[in-house]
Length: 190
Length: 193
Image (cartoon, rainbow over all chains, first blue to last red; front, side):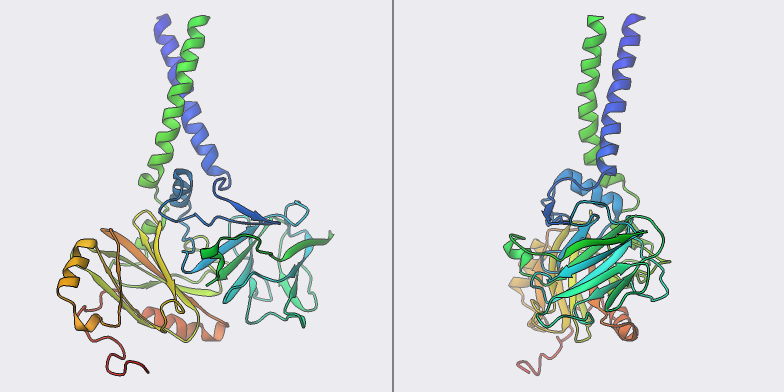
């Protein structure tokens, strides 16, 4: 009887620890292979055949279609430069230049990747349509209220995610190195 | 007490094994992976437009709303496949994924050095046969060798502004995932133009 109870306890521990930890790891953000520059993070290995088993499991669960090396690379930002989480309750300035790429797009979504339904029908900017300064840099105002210049509207008050996709960029072959990405600065909150 | 501790330790070790097994098995049992989601769009062997990433519809995560997407699930069991599409003069990129959603090959319009897509995917064995008996029609095609049985191709095409979306989607919709291997390649008579 004593043996049976001990065995059951051991098996219960094994199942809870094993499946629980697996679920916890996969439910968190991708943890392996991240390359961070300022507030931006990229996973260059994601979706490549030599990715680690955790990334593969995560990929299968999400059904994502990551960009291949020959296509480009995606950077994601969930926080501003100070490390505070991006939220639709605040307004932000996204300021600077993008690394060399033939084309880039910047998209704002909620934490799960859903686009916002805004009256302006705008969910991002791309390299061809953005208003730039004379030196080629740009500033985007991410805010709920209309702003002059490049206004990226958001609605609600939940967390935000910015995705910067660089298409046909040397970063995929030469590595991310010292690439400088746009700064994300918080302006005001309501 | 000492016994219970020992069983607890054993439980933890077994838990570690279960953890590893669970992580490794997730891809085999996933029901929301890319391959399965794409299968819902229509039959294999043909390109299907992925619904535009809009606030209401979101078929697959991680898609760029500034792009139009089309995907085709294919099998190489019956021979090499040839993919042909006439693309608009804009950025496009193409990626080949294996059954598990890993990206095994990708290129874009600049690396392809042309604006139309003419791509042949073959297994190493089929490739060896193609080398023995080269097909004149594939002179200008990009022929790649991939050790796959099944997989899918995803084409992303840039839509600079919404008014161009219908043209891009039409081009993607007309993309051919089962083009004949012996059909003459585009511009084979006007090479060098």
